[in-house]
Amino acid sequence: MQRLKQILLDEDKNGSDFRTGVICLCVLSLIHFLLGFYLGKQAFLMMSLLLWASISMLLWDRRQHFKINQDKVSSFLGYVLVAAVLVISIVRPGEKMLGFFPLAAYLGWFLIFIGAAQAKLYFKEFCILAIFGIPKLVPDTAFGLAPITAKFAAYALWYLGYPVSTNGFYIQVPNGGVEVVPACSGINLILHMLSIAVIFLCVFPTRRSHCIPFALLAMLLGFAMNGIRVAMLAVLSPPQFSAQFHYWHSASGASLFVLLTLVIYGVLYFSLLKSTHQPNPQ
Image (cartoon, rainbow, N blue to C red; front, side, top):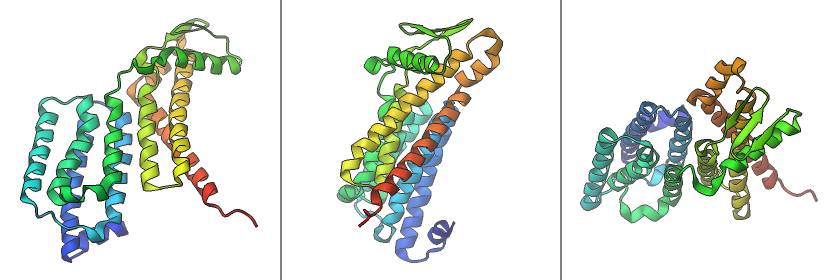
C-alpha cells in the first residue's frame, strides 16, 4: 500500500511519467485477465497474476530512471501494436492469443513509454513475457508424456497399497479407470511451472549455478502434481464417486491443483534460496 501511495501521490516529473505508465499497464493487464475469464481459464488467471506482479516489481525497481519516450517513430509503432493486440483479442480471442497477449501488449506499451533504445535494460521483463507464452505453442502431444504420466500415477497408487494396473494410456482400478489422454499428460503445467521458475529467478535472483536446478525442480514438481491429480481421478472413477470425479476433473478442480503447485514451489524456492545464502560456519 505504501508503494501504491507513493506512485499515486508523487508530484515530480519522473513520478508523474511513471504513474501514467503504470496506469496504462494496469489497464492492459486487466484486459488480459478479462480475456482469460472469458475463455474460462481459471488456472491460467493465477499464472497471469504472478506474471503481472513480477513485471510491476521489476519496473518499480527502475522507477527513478523512468522517462517518457520522445521518439515519435517508436511511439507510433507502439500504438499500432497495442491497437492490433486489442483488435485481435476482440475479433479472434483464443488460447494462443491469451498466452502471447502479455508480450505483445507490453512490447507496445514499452515502445510508447520507454522506447526501443532502452530495450537491453529491460531484458528480464521480456524474458519472462516470452517464456510465459511458450505453453500455448506446444501441443499436448509433445514429448509423448501421456504413458509416462499413466505409469507414474499407477505407481503412486501401487505404492500406497491401492490395487491398480496399467495398459498403455489406461489406468485400471476396481470398478473404474481413467484414460490419460495427451491433454492430461501434464505438459501444459510443466511448461507453465518453467515460466514460473523464470519469474522467481528474475525477481528473486540466486547464483547462476542454481538457475537450472531451480528450473528443473519447477518442471518436476509440475509433472508430479499432475500425476497425483491423475491418480486421484483414477480412485474417484468408480460410479459412486461421480460427483467428486467431475469436480476434480473440471477447471475448478484443476485450478486448486495449480494453486497448490505454486504454493509448494514458492515454499521450496524461498527455503532453498535462504539456505544457499546462509554463511558457512567457521
